[in-house]
Length: 385
Ligand SMILES: [Fe+2]
Image (cartoon, rainbow, N blue to C red):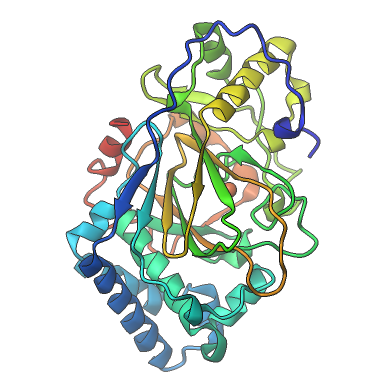
Protein backbone atom coordinates (compact mmCIF):
# COMPACT_ATOMS: atom_id res chain seq x y z
CA UNK A 1 0.00 0.00 0.00
CA UNK A 2 1.11 3.47 -0.79
CA UNK A 3 -0.83 5.29 1.87
CA UNK A 4 1.18 4.87 5.03
CA UNK A 5 0.39 7.83 7.21
CA UNK A 6 2.97 7.05 9.82
CA UNK A 7 5.67 7.15 7.17
CA UNK A 8 4.43 10.42 5.73
CA UNK A 9 5.05 13.85 7.08
CA UNK A 10 1.51 15.04 7.59
CA UNK A 11 0.65 18.71 7.38
CA UNK A 12 -1.25 19.38 10.53
CA UNK A 13 -4.00 21.95 10.38
CA UNK A 14 -4.18 24.84 12.76
CA UNK A 15 -5.10 23.07 15.96
CA UNK A 16 -8.40 24.41 17.22
CA UNK A 17 -9.45 21.16 18.88
CA UNK A 18 -9.57 20.60 22.61
CA UNK A 19 -6.58 18.62 23.84
CA UNK A 20 -7.63 15.94 26.24
CA UNK A 21 -5.14 14.68 28.73
CA UNK A 22 -3.66 11.26 27.98
CA UNK A 23 -2.73 10.86 31.60
CA UNK A 24 -5.16 8.09 32.41
CA UNK A 25 -2.76 5.19 32.09
CA UNK A 26 -3.14 1.66 30.88
CA UNK A 27 -4.80 -0.39 33.59
CA UNK A 28 -2.67 -2.92 35.42
CA UNK A 29 -4.39 -6.05 36.66
CA UNK A 30 -3.02 -9.10 38.41
CA UNK A 31 -4.29 -12.61 38.08
CA UNK A 32 -4.23 -14.04 41.59
CA UNK A 33 -2.03 -17.04 42.20
CA UNK A 34 -5.04 -19.26 42.80
CA UNK A 35 -6.74 -18.07 39.60
CA UNK A 36 -3.52 -18.55 37.62
CA UNK A 37 -3.19 -22.04 39.07
CA UNK A 38 -6.77 -22.86 38.06
CA UNK A 39 -6.14 -21.71 34.48
CA UNK A 40 -2.86 -23.60 34.29
CA UNK A 41 -4.43 -26.79 35.65
CA UNK A 42 -7.39 -26.58 33.29
CA UNK A 43 -5.16 -25.96 30.27
CA UNK A 44 -2.85 -28.83 31.18
CA UNK A 45 -5.71 -31.26 31.72
CA UNK A 46 -7.41 -30.23 28.48
CA UNK A 47 -4.17 -30.67 26.54
CA UNK A 48 -3.56 -34.13 28.02
CA UNK A 49 -7.19 -35.23 27.66
CA UNK A 50 -7.47 -34.02 24.10
CA UNK A 51 -4.23 -35.59 22.91
CA UNK A 52 -5.33 -38.91 24.42
CA UNK A 53 -8.66 -38.94 22.57
CA UNK A 54 -9.01 -41.54 19.82
CA UNK A 55 -8.20 -40.21 16.40
CA UNK A 56 -6.71 -36.93 17.55
CA UNK A 57 -3.96 -36.11 15.11
CA UNK A 58 -1.18 -33.55 15.07
CA UNK A 59 -3.32 -31.68 12.57
CA UNK A 60 -6.07 -31.27 15.19
CA UNK A 61 -3.61 -29.60 17.54
CA UNK A 62 -2.32 -27.43 14.71
CA UNK A 63 -5.66 -25.98 13.79
CA UNK A 64 -7.37 -25.97 17.22
CA UNK A 65 -10.64 -26.51 15.33
CA UNK A 66 -11.62 -29.98 16.56
CA UNK A 67 -15.11 -29.76 18.12
CA UNK A 68 -13.99 -31.98 21.02
CA UNK A 69 -11.31 -29.45 21.93
CA UNK A 70 -13.80 -26.61 21.66
CA UNK A 71 -16.21 -28.49 23.94
CA UNK A 72 -13.46 -29.09 26.50
CA UNK A 73 -12.51 -25.41 26.51
CA UNK A 74 -16.14 -24.36 26.69
CA UNK A 75 -16.83 -26.62 29.66
CA UNK A 76 -13.68 -25.83 31.63
CA UNK A 77 -13.96 -22.07 31.07
CA UNK A 78 -17.28 -22.05 32.92
CA UNK A 79 -15.64 -23.80 35.89
CA UNK A 80 -12.86 -21.24 36.31
CA UNK A 81 -13.09 -18.86 39.26
CA UNK A 82 -15.02 -15.64 38.79
CA UNK A 83 -11.74 -13.80 39.35
CA UNK A 84 -10.54 -15.08 35.95
CA UNK A 85 -13.55 -13.62 34.18
CA UNK A 86 -13.09 -10.40 36.09
CA UNK A 87 -9.42 -10.23 35.12
CA UNK A 88 -10.18 -10.43 31.40
CA UNK A 89 -13.15 -8.06 31.38
CA UNK A 90 -12.88 -5.30 28.77
CA UNK A 91 -10.61 -2.40 29.72
CA UNK A 92 -12.51 0.03 31.90
CA UNK A 93 -10.63 3.31 31.62
CA UNK A 94 -10.39 5.88 28.86
CA UNK A 95 -7.02 4.38 27.93
CA UNK A 96 -8.93 1.41 26.52
CA UNK A 97 -6.21 -1.12 27.32
CA UNK A 98 -5.15 -3.23 30.27
CA UNK A 99 -2.13 -5.37 31.09
CA UNK A 100 -2.82 -8.53 33.03
CA UNK A 101 0.12 -10.03 34.90
CA UNK A 102 0.53 -13.33 36.64
CA UNK A 103 0.02 -15.93 33.93
CA UNK A 104 2.16 -18.97 34.66
CA UNK A 105 4.89 -19.29 32.07
CA UNK A 106 8.39 -20.73 32.16
CA UNK A 107 10.76 -19.92 29.33
CA UNK A 108 12.35 -23.37 29.59
CA UNK A 109 9.04 -24.93 28.53
CA UNK A 110 8.79 -22.99 25.32
CA UNK A 111 11.55 -24.24 23.12
CA UNK A 112 12.86 -21.96 20.39
CA UNK A 113 10.75 -19.24 18.84
CA UNK A 114 9.51 -20.56 15.47
CA UNK A 115 10.38 -18.80 12.21
CA UNK A 116 6.81 -18.13 11.12
CA UNK A 117 3.18 -18.89 11.98
CA UNK A 118 3.16 -22.12 9.95
CA UNK A 119 6.08 -23.51 11.90
CA UNK A 120 4.50 -22.35 15.16
CA UNK A 121 1.26 -24.16 14.32
CA UNK A 122 3.13 -27.29 13.25
CA UNK A 123 5.19 -27.37 16.45
CA UNK A 124 2.04 -26.90 18.51
CA UNK A 125 0.76 -30.11 16.94
CA UNK A 126 3.98 -32.03 17.64
CA UNK A 127 4.01 -33.42 21.19
CA UNK A 128 7.79 -33.69 21.11
CA UNK A 129 8.28 -30.01 20.29
CA UNK A 130 5.15 -28.17 21.18
CA UNK A 131 3.75 -29.44 24.46
CA UNK A 132 4.05 -26.01 26.05
CA UNK A 133 2.96 -24.20 22.90
CA UNK A 134 -0.21 -26.26 22.64
CA UNK A 135 -0.92 -25.83 26.36
CA UNK A 136 -0.43 -22.09 25.95
CA UNK A 137 -2.80 -22.09 22.96
CA UNK A 138 -5.36 -23.73 25.23
CA UNK A 139 -4.56 -21.21 27.98
CA UNK A 140 -5.27 -18.37 25.56
CA UNK A 141 -8.53 -20.02 24.50
CA UNK A 142 -9.62 -20.42 28.13
CA UNK A 143 -8.91 -16.77 28.86
CA UNK A 144 -10.58 -15.62 25.64
CA UNK A 145 -13.58 -17.84 26.31
CA UNK A 146 -13.80 -16.31 29.78
CA UNK A 147 -14.10 -12.90 28.11
CA UNK A 148 -16.36 -13.69 25.15
CA UNK A 149 -16.28 -15.66 21.93
CA UNK A 150 -12.85 -16.43 20.47
CA UNK A 151 -12.84 -16.55 16.68
CA UNK A 152 -10.45 -16.72 13.76
CA UNK A 153 -10.36 -15.76 10.09
CA UNK A 154 -10.42 -18.26 7.25
CA UNK A 155 -7.89 -16.20 5.35
CA UNK A 156 -5.43 -15.57 8.18
CA UNK A 157 -2.95 -18.07 9.62
CA UNK A 158 -5.00 -20.97 8.26
CA UNK A 159 -8.09 -20.02 10.25
CA UNK A 160 -6.35 -20.76 13.54
CA UNK A 161 -8.11 -19.45 16.65
CA UNK A 162 -4.82 -18.55 18.31
CA UNK A 163 -2.42 -16.62 16.08
CA UNK A 164 1.32 -16.64 16.60
CA UNK A 165 2.93 -13.22 16.27
CA UNK A 166 6.64 -13.45 15.60
CA UNK A 167 9.13 -11.82 13.23
CA UNK A 168 9.49 -13.75 10.00
CA UNK A 169 12.29 -13.61 7.43
CA UNK A 170 11.24 -11.75 4.30
CA UNK A 171 8.43 -9.86 6.05
CA UNK A 172 10.55 -7.32 7.95
CA UNK A 173 9.01 -4.27 6.29
CA UNK A 174 5.38 -5.34 6.03
CA UNK A 175 2.49 -3.72 7.84
CA UNK A 176 1.65 -7.00 9.55
CA UNK A 177 2.43 -8.88 12.72
CA UNK A 178 5.25 -10.73 10.95
CA UNK A 179 7.25 -7.51 10.49
CA UNK A 180 10.05 -6.22 12.67
CA UNK A 181 12.40 -3.51 11.41
CA UNK A 182 9.60 -1.15 10.41
CA UNK A 183 7.18 0.69 12.65
CA UNK A 184 3.89 -1.18 12.73
CA UNK A 185 1.55 1.77 12.33
CA UNK A 186 -1.24 2.22 14.85
CA UNK A 187 -4.31 0.43 13.56
CA UNK A 188 -7.64 -1.08 14.46
CA UNK A 189 -7.31 -4.83 14.16
CA UNK A 190 -9.03 -5.99 10.96
CA UNK A 191 -10.48 -2.51 10.52
CA UNK A 192 -11.67 -3.43 7.02
CA UNK A 193 -14.24 -5.91 8.29
CA UNK A 194 -17.60 -5.41 10.03
CA UNK A 195 -17.02 -8.54 12.12
CA UNK A 196 -13.64 -7.46 13.49
CA UNK A 197 -12.89 -8.28 17.11
CA UNK A 198 -14.28 -6.20 19.93
CA UNK A 199 -11.46 -7.27 22.18
CA UNK A 200 -7.93 -8.32 21.32
CA UNK A 201 -5.78 -10.45 23.58
CA UNK A 202 -2.03 -10.41 23.11
CA UNK A 203 -0.23 -12.87 25.35
CA UNK A 204 3.54 -12.52 25.70
CA UNK A 205 5.64 -15.65 25.65
CA UNK A 206 8.99 -14.03 24.99
CA UNK A 207 10.20 -10.45 24.55
CA UNK A 208 13.95 -10.39 25.27
CA UNK A 209 14.59 -6.97 23.72
CA UNK A 210 11.61 -5.44 25.52
CA UNK A 211 9.92 -4.37 22.30
CA UNK A 212 7.03 -2.03 23.01
CA UNK A 213 3.44 -2.44 21.87
CA UNK A 214 1.81 0.95 21.39
CA UNK A 215 -1.80 1.76 22.24
CA UNK A 216 -3.66 5.01 21.56
CA UNK A 217 -7.24 5.62 22.65
CA UNK A 218 -9.71 7.73 20.70
CA UNK A 219 -11.18 8.64 24.10
CA UNK A 220 -8.04 10.60 24.92
CA UNK A 221 -7.73 12.57 21.69
CA UNK A 222 -9.03 16.06 21.02
CA UNK A 223 -11.17 16.71 17.94
CA UNK A 224 -13.15 19.84 17.24
CA UNK A 225 -16.68 19.74 15.92
CA UNK A 226 -15.72 20.11 12.29
CA UNK A 227 -13.16 17.33 12.53
CA UNK A 228 -15.63 15.02 14.25
CA UNK A 229 -18.16 15.77 11.53
CA UNK A 230 -15.70 15.02 8.73
CA UNK A 231 -14.38 11.85 10.33
CA UNK A 232 -17.82 10.70 11.42
CA UNK A 233 -19.16 10.29 7.89
CA UNK A 234 -18.16 7.53 5.46
CA UNK A 235 -15.51 8.94 3.16
CA UNK A 236 -12.85 6.30 2.38
CA UNK A 237 -12.67 2.50 2.53
CA UNK A 238 -10.18 0.50 4.55
CA UNK A 239 -8.74 -2.41 2.56
CA UNK A 240 -7.67 -5.82 3.93
CA UNK A 241 -4.13 -5.95 5.25
CA UNK A 242 -1.37 -7.95 3.64
CA UNK A 243 -1.85 -10.96 5.91
CA UNK A 244 -5.07 -11.73 4.00
CA UNK A 245 -3.36 -11.79 0.62
CA UNK A 246 -4.39 -9.60 -2.30
CA UNK A 247 -7.34 -11.53 -3.74
CA UNK A 248 -10.05 -9.09 -2.74
CA UNK A 249 -10.30 -6.75 -5.72
CA UNK A 250 -13.54 -8.25 -7.00
CA UNK A 251 -15.32 -6.78 -4.01
CA UNK A 252 -16.43 -3.15 -4.17
CA UNK A 253 -14.64 -0.96 -1.65
CA UNK A 254 -17.22 0.84 0.45
CA UNK A 255 -16.37 3.98 2.39
CA UNK A 256 -16.66 3.75 6.17
CA UNK A 257 -16.74 6.27 9.00
CA UNK A 258 -13.46 6.73 10.85
CA UNK A 259 -14.90 7.97 14.13
CA UNK A 260 -18.20 6.72 15.55
CA UNK A 261 -20.10 6.83 18.80
CA UNK A 262 -20.86 10.13 20.48
CA UNK A 263 -18.60 12.89 21.71
CA UNK A 264 -18.23 11.48 25.21
CA UNK A 265 -17.85 7.85 24.08
CA UNK A 266 -16.23 7.95 20.65
CA UNK A 267 -15.22 4.81 18.78
CA UNK A 268 -12.58 4.41 16.11
CA UNK A 269 -12.01 2.44 12.93
CA UNK A 270 -8.58 3.38 11.68
CA UNK A 271 -5.82 1.87 9.58
CA UNK A 272 -3.95 4.53 7.60
CA UNK A 273 -1.61 2.03 5.98
CA UNK A 274 -4.58 0.49 4.15
CA UNK A 275 -6.65 3.63 3.57
CA UNK A 276 -6.40 5.34 0.13
CA UNK A 277 -5.98 8.82 1.56
CA UNK A 278 -5.01 10.32 -1.78
CA UNK A 279 -8.62 9.82 -2.88
CA UNK A 280 -9.90 12.27 -0.28
CA UNK A 281 -10.01 16.05 -0.43
CA UNK A 282 -7.69 18.31 1.52
CA UNK A 283 -10.27 19.03 4.18
CA UNK A 284 -10.74 15.36 5.04
CA UNK A 285 -7.03 14.61 4.91
CA UNK A 286 -6.38 17.50 7.24
CA UNK A 287 -8.85 16.13 9.79
CA UNK A 288 -7.42 12.63 9.35
CA UNK A 289 -3.89 13.92 9.84
CA UNK A 290 -4.97 15.75 12.96
CA UNK A 291 -6.45 12.52 14.31
CA UNK A 292 -3.18 10.73 13.55
CA UNK A 293 -1.19 13.39 15.36
CA UNK A 294 -3.50 13.19 18.34
CA UNK A 295 -3.25 9.40 18.47
CA UNK A 296 0.51 9.81 18.50
CA UNK A 297 0.28 12.40 21.28
CA UNK A 298 -1.79 10.17 23.56
CA UNK A 299 0.16 7.02 22.77
CA UNK A 300 1.07 4.69 25.62
CA UNK A 301 3.71 2.02 25.21
CA UNK A 302 3.24 -1.35 26.86
CA UNK A 303 6.40 -3.40 27.18
CA UNK A 304 5.11 -6.89 27.79
CA UNK A 305 7.07 -9.38 29.82
CA UNK A 306 6.58 -13.13 29.49
CA UNK A 307 3.40 -14.15 31.26
CA UNK A 308 1.68 -10.82 30.66
CA UNK A 309 -1.45 -10.36 28.60
CA UNK A 310 -2.45 -7.13 26.88
CA UNK A 311 -6.18 -6.54 26.54
CA UNK A 312 -7.11 -4.03 23.83
CA UNK A 313 -10.57 -2.62 23.25
CA UNK A 314 -10.56 -2.74 19.46
CA UNK A 315 -13.44 -0.26 19.16
CA UNK A 316 -11.60 2.38 21.16
CA UNK A 317 -7.87 1.79 20.78
CA UNK A 318 -5.45 1.50 17.91
CA UNK A 319 -2.34 -0.57 18.52
CA UNK A 320 1.05 -0.81 16.88
CA UNK A 321 4.59 -1.88 17.55
CA UNK A 322 7.90 -0.08 17.61
CA UNK A 323 10.60 -1.27 15.18
CA UNK A 324 13.10 -3.85 16.34
CA UNK A 325 15.92 -5.93 14.94
CA UNK A 326 14.91 -9.57 14.57
CA UNK A 327 17.31 -12.20 15.87
CA UNK A 328 16.17 -15.27 13.91
CA UNK A 329 18.04 -17.47 16.35
CA UNK A 330 15.12 -19.00 18.24
CA UNK A 331 15.02 -16.33 20.94
CA UNK A 332 12.83 -13.77 19.16
CA UNK A 333 9.81 -11.95 20.51
CA UNK A 334 6.80 -14.26 20.49
CA UNK A 335 3.21 -13.30 21.20
CA UNK A 336 -0.03 -15.23 20.93
CA UNK A 337 -3.09 -13.32 19.77
CA UNK A 338 -6.79 -14.10 20.02
CA UNK A 339 -9.70 -12.16 18.54
CA UNK A 340 -12.70 -12.01 20.85
CA UNK A 341 -16.28 -11.07 20.09
CA UNK A 342 -18.31 -9.53 22.89
CA UNK A 343 -22.04 -8.97 23.29
CA UNK A 344 -21.71 -5.46 21.93
CA UNK A 345 -23.56 -3.90 19.03
CA UNK A 346 -21.98 -2.00 16.17
CA UNK A 347 -23.68 0.55 13.90
CA UNK A 348 -26.38 -1.07 11.77
CA UNK A 349 -24.81 0.29 8.58
CA UNK A 350 -21.83 -2.01 9.05
CA UNK A 351 -23.97 -5.10 8.56
CA UNK A 352 -24.30 -4.27 4.85
CA UNK A 353 -20.52 -4.34 4.29
CA UNK A 354 -19.09 -7.23 2.28
CA UNK A 355 -15.90 -7.64 4.32
CA UNK A 356 -14.02 -8.22 1.05
CA UNK A 357 -15.03 -11.87 1.13
CA UNK A 358 -13.16 -12.62 4.35
CA UNK A 359 -15.03 -14.97 6.64
CA UNK A 360 -14.69 -15.68 10.31
CA UNK A 361 -14.11 -19.07 11.89
CA UNK A 362 -16.53 -19.45 14.80
CA UNK A 363 -16.34 -22.92 16.36
CA UNK A 364 -17.86 -21.59 19.57
CA UNK A 365 -20.99 -21.11 17.52
CA UNK A 366 -21.69 -17.44 18.03
CA UNK A 367 -21.94 -17.76 21.78
CA UNK A 368 -20.34 -14.70 23.31
CA UNK A 369 -18.96 -16.39 26.36
CA UNK A 370 -19.30 -17.18 29.99
CA UNK A 371 -19.74 -13.59 31.11
CA UNK A 372 -23.51 -13.65 30.81
CA UNK A 373 -26.24 -13.12 28.31
CA UNK A 374 -25.92 -10.60 25.48
CA UNK A 375 -26.41 -7.12 26.76
CA UNK A 376 -24.73 -7.80 30.06
CA UNK A 377 -21.21 -7.06 31.11
CA UNK A 378 -19.26 -6.29 28.01
CA UNK A 379 -21.41 -3.55 26.58
CA UNK A 380 -21.68 -1.72 29.84
CA UNK A 381 -17.98 -2.07 30.54
CA UNK A 382 -17.10 -0.53 27.20
CA UNK A 383 -19.53 2.30 27.60
CA UNK A 384 -18.27 3.10 31.07
CA UNK A 385 -14.88 4.09 29.83
FE1 LIG B 1 -2.63 -5.69 14.82
